[in-house]
Length: 289
Image 1: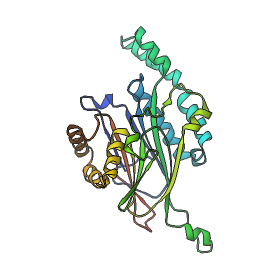
Image 2: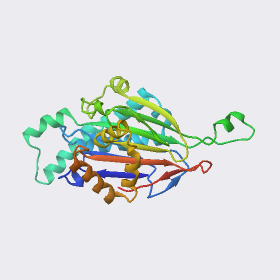
Image 3: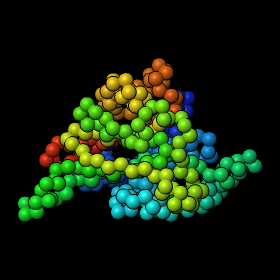
Image 4: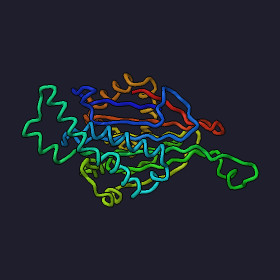
């Protein structure tokens, strides 16, 4: 599972406001035969502590998806769990942040208070990948279903999941490059309205064939990818080549796309999951961060 983060041009890794989390934790090119959950978030730059909120959001979403699939599969239970795990502890995390700033001799300034009171915001896309069910010769239904990895994806905002299968790619939740930049939905660190969050969540489900890829990406890379699809240039092939050697090659490729004007200068996050050969019962993990 490739996990790749590239900050904006001119920003450091510590300033990156995109975040990635995967459960269970995987090393480079690990093959897995159990369920896994990956999440990507894009912290809104105009909100204070956006990177902290994005990291918290992906951590909790990945945990829920990996440990509690019955919650992950339903809008309201998932929204309630995200509020419980990420939103409700936010005030305590702000207090800890303020105390650390005070201890470091950098107390919060009066002009920072409105931003803290407003809260932080981020988009989110997460996917749970499920291995094939056990096949029992005496159970015809199980045999009929055996062999196919399945996935369930959830999203809020313009971070996207692409499912690449052969010479085709499908996109979720956005499907056209023109949809980017139109004030995406955001999940706020002070939003306790479970019903409102549940109403804004989108779901997608599918099956994976051998060699299929799932790509979780934040908006700048997602917009580039969709423009390529619209131009019938099969952008996944270029992306596969760019990620083959890991972080440094990918970062150089991102820089070239920015300099050419084909990609907006924004933080980039990518998770890449590849389905293994039929009958292997495995998904391929390629991990670099």
